[in-house]
Amino acid sequence: MATGPSRLGWPRTGVLVTGGASGIGRASALALAEVGRPVAVWDLDGDAAQAVADECRSLGVVAHAACVDVAVTSGLSDHVAATAGALGSLGGFVHAAGVSGAAIVEDLDDATWDATLDVNLRAAAMLFRELVTPFRAAGPGSAAVLVSSIEGHFGSAMLPAYCSSKAGVLGLMRSMAQHLATDGVRVNAVCPGAVDTPMLAPAFDLLPGFRDQVESRTPLGRVSTPDEIARPIRFLLSDEASFITGAHLTVDGGMTAVTAI
Image (cartoon, rainbow, N blue to C red; front, side, top):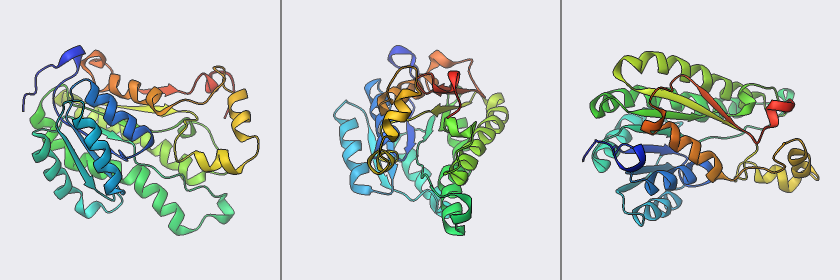
């Protein structure tokens, strides 16, 4: 597969998207397919991943779907090899898989803590371990974007595990940016605010007035759509962002510019 520049400054190398069946992951996969990037959609829901891969193919790109539990890191090497083979190359990575682990600390059990850190943070680190070789093979211009959160910067009493994992994602991003810079590989993060995704939907549904509260504290007056996070992710993977690495981009409608969350 060609690895030279594609239209609008996007390379042609394949991109692995975890959590790609819904929310920010799905939107990212489709946004990348729109500009000609081959896409691999990984998700626990294999049928939904296949449906998103089919949508990507309808946009004229090679797409691959896989049912993958990223918390089971012992199998990641084989999954990465299969994905690289299916796409022809791997020069991009979006870690959008995530769980909230909502529980105040006195109600936080070991399993919830472990599951949250395993999916949000540990999986990203272990995937980098497997992606270094294909990224180097794909050449300079390879890039990764980790989905952190504004809660990687601010505390939330209901989300001690989530806040810890998303702060850790930022530390991992900075470490990998330094490690891979000499190979011309860039690593960045996005920090979304409130996004209308399946992760946040239960809070909006179950907590009266919560959506109104979030929107009133956001200068733009609303929550974002997944597409509004996917487009900055696509930018950070593009040649348009060729001198950006080790950075985090906050995409929260101005919330943290004027108030804590």
